[in-house]
Length: 608
Image: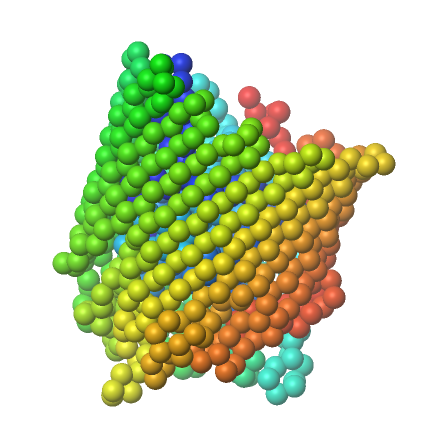
C-alpha cells in the first residue's frame, strides 16, 4: 500500500505573507473539529462519527474502519496528514481504526476534492493537523480490558527551534458477549488488538525568510480477525507497520506590496501488511514504498488603492512507488507526475475571495485533468457564503489493475463532476447555523463483478449520482449559573445508480450509504463538572446492488461525566447506554453497553 502527497493546489489552507499583510484562504467547505478531553482516547473513526454527518463503516471492533463523505464510499475519501494521503494505493482505503485522535490537534472534514495524486478525494477529504505545543499525559481504561496511554511533549519551543514528540499505545481483548446467527450466546474470540504510534517532529527557523520542518510517524499494530455471526471461530491475524516522513522547506521574500514564496516537500513511506489465516490456508504479504517530491512557487501582489490581492501559485509533483504482494505477477514499479496552478483574488478587507484551480497528471499512459473554482463572500461579520464547482478524477487502484485473479489493466479513470454551496451564520442568543447542499456525478465507476467465466473482475460499469444536504445547529446559553450547550448535525444522502445492468439496478441506492444520519448532543457545565449526552441515529443501509437486503436503522446513546481540577481532568463514559444490538457491516457483531474512564494531565506550565 502507498501514501500520496501533494501541495501545489492546497485544498485546506494557504498563507501568503506580505509587508504588513497576512492573507489566509480556506477552501469553502472546511469544518474544523478539535478533540475534547473525553474524546482524546478515541480513534479517528469514533471522533468523526460522533461529531459530523459523515458515515463510518465499522467492520467490527478491530476491523478496517472507513468514512463516507458526500454520499461516496471510503475509497473516494482522502485522509491527509501533512498533505500526505493515507489512502492505500493498493485498495484505495485508509483504516481509521489505526489513527488515534490523540496525536492531532485539529481535524478538518471537507467535501472538496482533496487534490491528491491518483485523485483519491472525489467524495471529500479529512485533514489531520498538528498546530500546538502540547505537554500532556493521558491514560484510559475501558470495558473488555482496553487500555490506552498517550504522551505529548514539546521540550523545546523557542523562536528558532521547536522539538516535540507524541506517543500513543493501546491494547485490548474486545471479548464482548453477542448472539450469533444461530441464536447462540458467545464471547467474541480472536479480537485482541495492539497498536503503538511514535510521532517526533523538529522545526528550525533558518532566518526571517526560511524555515525547515521534519516529521516522522512510525506505527506498528497487531490484531486478530474475529469470527462473523455465521462463523464459529476466527484464527486469522493481521500485522500493520507504517513508517511515514515528511520534510519541508519554506522560503518567503516580500517587499513593498509584493511577495514570493517557495515550498519544497519530500515525503517517504514504507508500509507493510501481513495477513495470515491458518484455518483457510490464506497468507498475504503486502509491501509498498513511496517517494514524492513536491515543489510550489507563489506570487502575490496587493493593490492598496482597490484593496485587492492577486495571487498565482504554480506547482509540480513527481512520485515513485514500488509494490510487492503475492497476488501480483511481479513487483510493480510506478511513476507519476503532475502540474498544478491556482489563480486567486481577495479583496475588501477579506470580504470576498475566489480562486480557479487546474491540474493535469500522467500515470500509466492516462493524462486526466481536474478543474474547479471556489467563491467565498462575507455578507456580515458572522454570515458567510461559499460556492464550489469542478471536475476531478480518480485512477484505478493497483489492486483494480493487477490483482490476480480479477485485475483489469484496461480500466479507465473515474471522472467526477461536483458542486456544493454552503451558508453559515451566527444569530442572537448564541445560535450558530451551518448548511450545505451538494451534488456529485461520477462516471466510469469501478466495481468488482463476475465476468463471463465467473471470475470476479474489476470493471467500469456504471454512473453514480450522489446528492444531498447537511445541516448543523448549535446553541449555547448561560442559565441558572449553568452553561447549557446543544448541537445537532443531520445529513441526507441519496446516492443513486444511474446505469442499469445484470448486476446493477438503475435507481438503486449505493450499498452501505444511509440516506439519513443524525447526531444530537446536549451538555451542562456547572463549575468544575460537565455532563454530556450524545444520541445518534443511522438509517437503514442496503447491502446489495438491487436493494433487496438491508441492515435496519439503529440508535445509540452515550453519556459522559467530566470533572476538572485545573490541569487535571477525569472523564467517565457509558457507551451504548441502552445496550442496543446493531450491525454497521453485515454479520460483524458490535459491542453492547460498555464503559470508559480517561485521566488527562496537562503539564504545559512545567515546560517553558
